[in-house]
Image 1 (tube, helix red, strand yellow):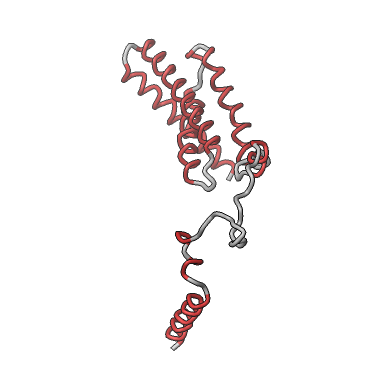
Image 2 (cartoon, rainbow, N blue to C red):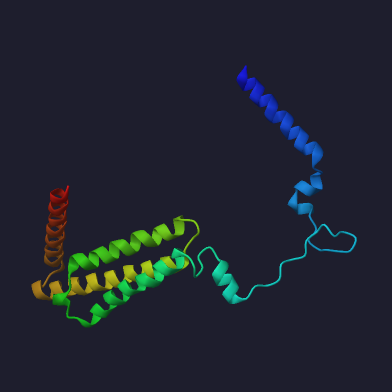
Length: 175
């Protein structure tokens, strides 16, 4: 009984709305966007805003975290890029693998969230590139030491598994 009542109510309210509002007013295809003296109800377009006003009022503008978080994250990218000058034997594989993973995961996430944040996607993609380049340098260094790529990959795997186990132990101790 209540489901029928709800359906009738919805149908009646839709009919009443359709009867009150002319079709042309409800359908944006039929709207005219020019204002004339004969038709003052149509609004004139808003005046153009300056670049500063658009940056200030934007969803990802200067006064939001969507702007300042990527700006601060560029520091992490620059710190990783400054390691390009260090010898490959002094680089940390786990740190650069973390940069690579963080960059790839958050780059994808920046295109899923609303509002889409292209500035954050750019900084995360650069973070992924820095991590990839550094991991490549480490791999080439280990290959030159051992003479084979397979041995270098096994060493890297052991190092990463060991680091993951250390993190797991630390988490278990904290919990």
